[in-house]
Every structure is written in C-alpha cells, then in structure tokens.
Image (cartoon, rainbow, N blue to C red; front, side, top):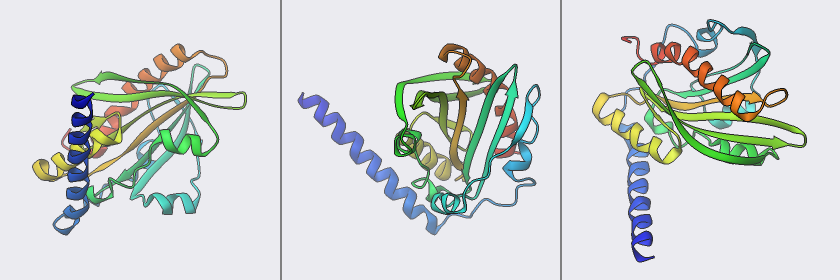
Length: 216
C-alpha cells in the first residue's frame, strides 16, 4: 500500500514538472508554421478509400480547442464508414489544450466501455493507441485514438506530455495533436471494426508522417 502511494506521488510530481516545463517553454520556442498544405487538403485522398466529405467543425469548438490546423473527414471502404479527426498544434505550449475522448464523449452523453491499449507498426513507426467503445442510445461506435508528438505516439495524455517535452528539448520540435478514428458498429462487430481500423491506420499514417516530417 505504501509503495503504491509512493509510486503515485512520484508520477504526479513528474507530470507536474513536465507540464510546468511545457507551459514555460513558450518563451524560447519558435512556432513551426508554413506547411505546404493544410491537413484538410492532405487527406482528401487515401488509397483504397472513398472520400465521403469533410465534417464542419463549429467555430466555438475550434476556438475552444485553439487549433492551429485540423482535419475532420469521412471515408468508406467495403461498406464500413470511417471518420478521421486530427486536431493539430505547431507548438509545445499548447499540449495542455488537447482534449481526451475519455472526457469529451461522456460530456456528450456517451457511455464509454471496453478501454484497451494496443500497438501497431506502420513501416518503422510505432503507433501506440487506445481503443474504446462509445454508446448513446442504440448507436455504438468503436473509437481508436492516440496523441501524436512529432514522430512519437502516446495512448494517453500523461505519456504525451513527456514525449512533447523530449521532442521540444532534443529535436526542437513542438508539433503535437490528437488523432481519432471513429467506426460505427451498425453492421459489424467490434473485432471487425478494430481490424478495419488498423488497416485504415496502415493506409493513412504514412501520409501523416510525411506531413509532420518532410524528410520522411
């Protein structure tokens, strides 16, 4: 019991230190801007998937999230629908702004179930992600999400903060954001949706990596 409490206190102190460092890092950080394309243009086409249009984000939501860029786009393949949301920031000081699906879905009335953490490799890149099922009324969806920090991924905000701090200090890169894939469970079960989601990650993630790092 004592060791568990001590461990929690150490983790809490480390997180507070990382968050404080990220907030104060704004003083010497140079914003990363000037990408050739906006994210909404980058993801107009993904090989093997039909483009089903872009979803408009309400101005008050975008303003609240203080986004530097985002894409909120729908796709379809073999009768399965996919919604890709990426909320992106160019600077490390905004890492505390990124929201968690574990907070925003319940706030919208969803019941969140079956939270698990998994990993998939896309070429040489490791994607650590969280999977949840969200239900409201009779509607259910599988949600895959992770936090991107430069070329690193984190399944939760705690690990994300350490990656953002590391990349800012070591690589001079403050880019970070939330990646979320939603798949309705209308005509498929959760295992089929997860397999389809992993296939989708393999298709879109190389495009995202090239957006993040043009040397890739």
